[in-house]
Image (cartoon, rainbow, N blue to C red; front, side):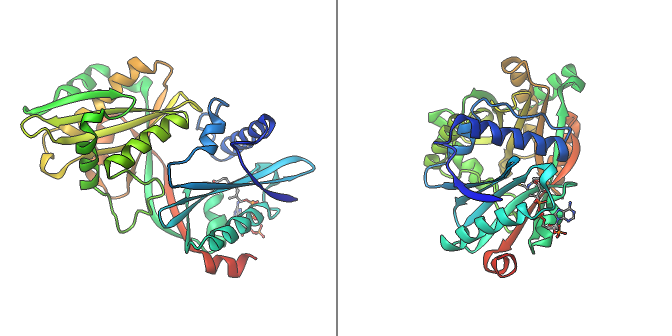
Length: 331
Ligand SMILES: CC(C)(COP(=O)(O)OP(=O)(O)OC[C@H]1O[C@@H](n2cnc3c(N)ncnc32)[C@H](O)[C@@H]1OP(=O)(O)O)[C@@H](O)C(=O)NCCC(=O)NCCS
């Protein structure tokens, strides 16, 4: 088996197609309930990063073709790993070989640790535990099947906002005039900062936020924002963010939903999420479901999700390892 560094930005189209095929075989084996990915903007999804971040990728192949893919995203002070091995080629050491290549680079770049997000109930948990990774943070994925939504009831929830707040819908991202306030609202609420590895880091200042929205668009991820403005102060009191990926346009990802501490108890969380669903139904009629994640133990958001009809589905487990420890055992 041969492992080589790979640049998706410059790769021939056949290699992008082979990577997509491998990803879809992995999904079909490990998370068969998830929709397969399409080729639309798949190259950009792999190649584009936020300014200041870098992704390095490797492919493993043998006579049968592409066996596996791994990448490391250098973000802040952590290296975030992705790793896939074609289901019929597993348990032959390909995963470990790719992990070793990534770990060597991570160490060479001076990073101390590797983080990875693993879907509960798949072999990846056993694999990373076998390599000494420890589980640092667990979230629960929740899925809302849009065919089960009671739109009349949802309309009531969308209206149920305390007076003094205005709900705004912004397809494409937060408006320039509210960027500063928006970033402030995000900075005020950081869920479990001690535990969350921030493998999907949020943007806490307006420059980073602007860059993050541009990066989403460039990767084929269309953002939608609903926010609550506190009319008296002009502050952003709450927000919810959804992305519809070109790569799997029937399933939307609901990222952060935030209600700033002083504005809690006025029905904003529920109303924001309910309004978002109405807007999505109109803007993205092909959508079948929406997935979102909430930290285990974050009771208020779990209740909001349950009320809207989201069903808990699988754990999303963040693992981490000290890269020197890993290299001692793997190479
Ligand atoms: C995780 C994954 C990459 C492992 O690839 P692999 O080529 O099978 O890994 P290896 O053959 O190098 O396995 C190394 C060790 O991990 C452990 N391991 C791997 N798969 C395992 C499983 N299904 N059950 C128990 N242990 C397992 C074993 O200790 C194994 O050593 P052994 O075969 O000598 O017992 C592969 O299962 C995969 O692609 N999973 C889906 C993708 C994914 O979720 N990636 C993580 C998030 S990005």
